[in-house]
Length: 116
Ligand code: SF4
Ligand code: SF4
Image (cartoon, rainbow, N blue to C red; front, side, top):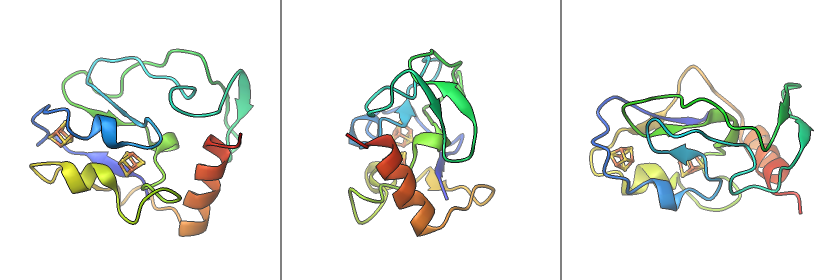
C-alpha cells in the first residue's frame, strides 16, 4: 500500500528530501510524475491510466505535506522501510488501508518509475 500523511503533519519538511521517488510535496505545491523519476512525455501507468509525465498536477493538499500514491513504492527497491515514516517526528506517515498493494506490485512500480 502507499503511505499517506495524516492531518497531524506539522509541516516540518523532514520527509520530503528522504523520498527516493520524489513522491512527497509541500502543501499547495504542483507536482509532476517526471520529478525525480525516469518518466517523460506521454506514459501509460501500470494501472492503465494515461498521463503526461511533464504536466503540472494540482496539489493533493493545500495545508500539509502530501504523498502522490502513484509515485510511492513504500520505498521498496531502495530501502528496508518507508523513509518518510522513519524520519517523521510526529509519526503521521502511515499505511493507507484504502490503497493496499502487494510487494510485487510495489517493486514493479519502482522499476516502472526508474527504468533507465
Ligand atoms: Fe517516498 Fe518511501 Fe515515503 Fe513512499 S514510503 S512517500 S516512496 S519516502
Ligand atoms: Fe509532516 Fe512528518 Fe513530513 Fe514533517 S516529516 S512534513 S510532520 S509528514
